Structures are given as C-alpha cells and as structure tokens.
Image 1: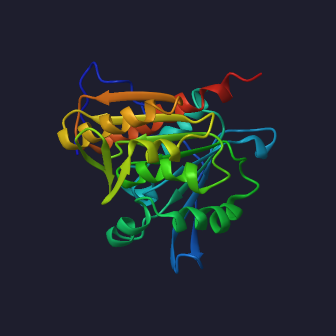
Image 2: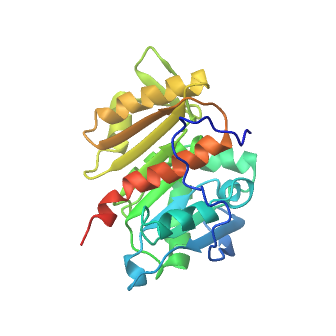
Length: 258
C-alpha cells in the first residue's frame, strides 16, 4: 500500500494528518439473529443543536476503517472545514474472512440484524438519512440494504465494489456466486430517491470491468448515480479517498439546507 500520491491526484480529505478528533466508542454487538458477536465503533463528529439531526453512515469492514486505515482524523477535518455535516459513523467489524464471505454478499439476515438489533444501540445519535459505505463485498451489500430494510431512505456509496465478478455476455452481474439479471438487480435499487456513489480503480482490470457492468445496471434505474474511476489499483489510500469523496457528494444536499 503506497502512501505516495502524484501531483494531479484528487485532493485527499486528510491533509491535516493529526487533526484532533473525538474518541470513537467501541462496543460489542452480540447478535441473536446471526449467532455471533463482534466489535462495532460509534464515532460522532462536529456540533449539532439537535443530535437527532445528525445523519448516519454505516461503514462495513469496520475494523479496516478503525485500525488499518483509520478514518477518524479525515472525518473530523472534513467536518471542521464544513465539507461534511456533523454526523454519526457506525463501523461494523467483519469478524473474519469466512464470516465476511457469508454475511456481506447479499445476505438478508445480516441487514435485518443490523436493523433490528444494532441500530437501536445507536438510536438517539442519528436519524435515518443513512449512507452505507462498502468496499468489495460490502459494496454489493450496500445496494442489497435498499431491498431488505424499510429504513433505507437515503444514500449508498459503493466504493471499489469488487464483489461483482466479470459479467457474462454483458447481461449478468455475479456477486459472490449469485447471478443477478439486469431486471432483478434493478429491482433491488428501484426505490425513489436513491443516491449512489460508485468508484473503481482502472489498474484492477477485473474489478474495474465488473464495476462498469454494475454502473450500467444502476443507470437503468433512473437513480442519481455518481461514478468515478481512479487511475490506481488495490490501494488503501484510494479506498479512503473514495469513502470521503463519496460522503461529501452524497451528503451535499444536507449542507445546502438552510
């Protein structure tokens, strides 16, 4: 993972590397529905007159964003600059690769558990103007959340959504072994008002082609789609940059409100 960026790279959201930030709260979530337990982190940024007006972002692969490529300082800096609204961020640990491979690709019970068990833990922090942030399988899970949950009323960011394998014949997108036709995929995200940020790196050809296929499916749904292709590959800095850029874009309407 390179920490070097070329001069014309998109501006990063973490120029102040040591930005002071509030401490994240780490909890243990024991899920009766899923029969497992994991860490989750709750992170609150900025000041808001009414805590209920804070939007909520759910970050899958939470241990990655909490420990491997921390997002605390970047989110604090962007909030201080007024580029992000005061918000609540919920980071969900994947537990391990085996569990990750079961729960994140189109797994309805996972999202029902999030809705029925986990969100009550953060109730009082944020309303349901929700952004789901994913990379790889979590990216596909972000879209599936639209179908599984009546609370999915806002935005979805699919960052480097490499869950999708290369399409077959231009008609089918594969997600963790599950084939989704154009019609069935469109049905998953057909609710009105969805805003989607989708990003992929050109230097990962299979992932890039898969995301272009996913983009083609999304554009048939008449939703608001923001697509960005990055001149990069399998690089954590690209993922964090896509996360912050996606949040800025998806939450722009919240900043423009009086």
